[in-house]
Image (cartoon, rainbow, N blue to C red; front, side, top):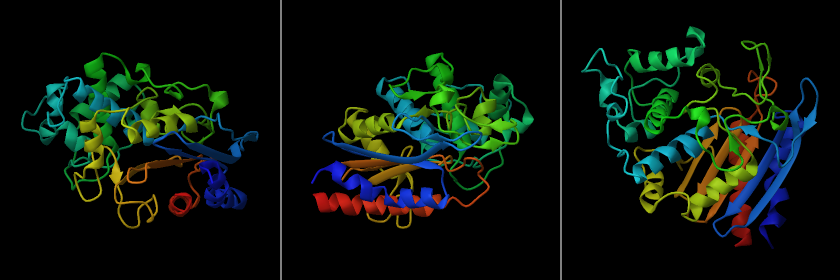
Length: 339
């Protein structure tokens, strides 16, 4: 039995969700360290204003998968190049961070702390309500007196990391080089639609769903990346086979910085989004639009479920968490049977 023989059964939870109308469409992909690959897709890339079907070539707004596929990976590459160290403070690259208060807590934040969400910064702030000039919003992020709190999963951490990448490379995020099948500027006609957005007054398609990333110019450290299922699987395989990052960087993304977090990623814990069947040496991440990627290093297996669950509205119960968990548990059970 080959990997392709499992994909229909692995896709069953997503097929049920599509049939019930919980999500418009989905693509599921599996890849192994040795290069085996299987894919299955069904449903609609768009139902408003006109229906269009999902395909293998559909581009998805990856939302917070941007954090791991682009931002974390790029920061680690810059570490590998010797341009920064993980434990350097951000001010080594962004000296104007909280420049009016040399004792501000933000000036002591390190790259590692931001990558692992071990800072005092809040989860999110509706920055787009303050305006849409990207340069002014970046200045606001840098000079904002952020209210302290316990460590939480924070978009602000990754906005700061995105600004650092721009400073180091001298290029705006939206102009950064990307692997094949990823883009910050996709062709809208090839994309799955996301939300009928009351703020923008249209169904969003081919432009980032996240309002803050949109206001920051279309790309930010926390959101803005688009990709196809094959692009995501190529990336996952590069981590499984060790070609995508150095051994030290791979170790960093697999090593806990807190109970649930590694550098960039979330590590397995009972009840998490990837299901309880995967090995303890599994990392994963999800995106608000309905995307997700999980990498089980013990099994040499990764899987990605890409959906457009916010289309046409986020304000409904898409059942995305139980869908992700059921998919992960099905994938592992079937893979173990194959092994």
